[in-house]
Image 1 (cartoon, rainbow, N blue to C red):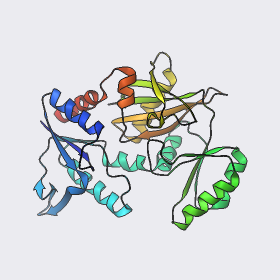
Image 2 (cartoon, helix red, strand yellow; image 1 turned 60 degrees about the horizontal axis):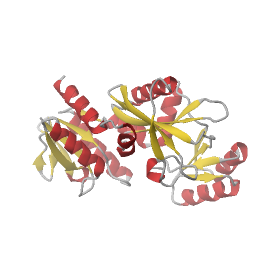
Image 3 (cartoon, rainbow, N blue to C red; image 1 turned 45 degrees about the horizontal axis):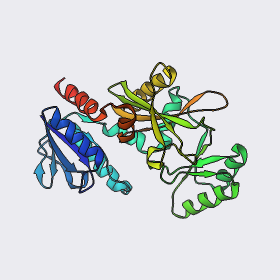
Length: 296
């Protein structure tokens, strides 16, 4: 079986290398393809997909990235190519789920509508609305609407700073996204779901500061469903609502109330920290699921 791994870098990053390793260990052939080198064509009532002018011949594929900062036009071109490829083969995650999770606001909105608890959040183009939000909440996190690894997330306590951030973004024709800060008990949860079941989970414990991303210096500690049954159930529900066949769901627990909230579910999750903390092999779980899906 020829399994495509789609990313944008000229040199495959660690997660892609890990998937390639898993594909080979499971007895199949990995094919690394850069998304920007893919094109699609409609001709003679047929849909064709190419990579560097050669027909893409795969049995299935996994999407790992569509690029860090593509323009809206490039993003939808790349999504369109994936949709064309989906016409021929199974792909995870689907183009629809990527669209739903690319924008943090849209994914939170969909979760809230379907009964998943999320933090108080605003998206706005009005600097005065941003200022008022900080005045009401006392403390909030500014996040890039599209981003990952905790990069660009900033804790805001001064309403005037929120105003200036929002005004600066507006001059670039960009919206502002603010989320009420919830005091955590020194950690949050990353729960990894593949094919509708949890394959592993960890606490991400803060080493310093307030961010709990592994990429920002937090460290992982393995947890079990017995310890966090409600949070595991929420992670599975989150993946189902967003149509994600593999995902890392980030959940925080309010230190004061004990309530838990979904912060984010990623269509292109990383798992190096999870692998180190739990001893599981997420890449093999993902590829095994994709192989089963292809054979069905």
